[in-house]
Amino acid sequence: MKVHTDSVQWQIEVDKKDIAYIVSIFEAYDNLAVVRTLDPSLGIIELMISPDYLEDAHKLTEALAKEIPFRLLAKRTISANS
Image 1 (spheres, rainbow, N blue to C red):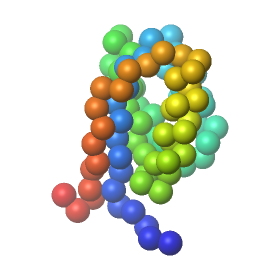
Image 2 (image 1 turned 90 degrees about the vertical axis):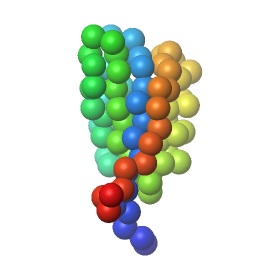
Image 3 (image 1 turned 135 degrees about the vertical axis):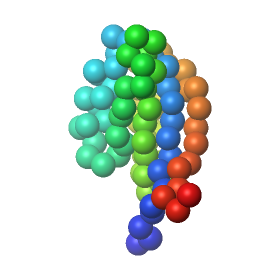
Image 4 (image 1 turned 60 degrees about the vertical axis):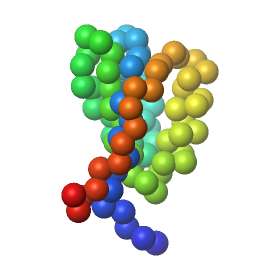
């Protein structure tokens, strides 16, 4: 298995009351993504995802979108070699 040193980062806007719920969901899936709160007053969070888990993270966010509204603001890949 190839070990990735990159991470994919998604910035998402959600209702600030949903941030703790989203964090708990991602924490329940060990190593799927790390959730950081960038601006709690605006409900801006960031998911830091290993490329190995990108498909699973996408499926989980699709499922979450059915129960809580959110808006994808940005996607980017960060390389450790940069």
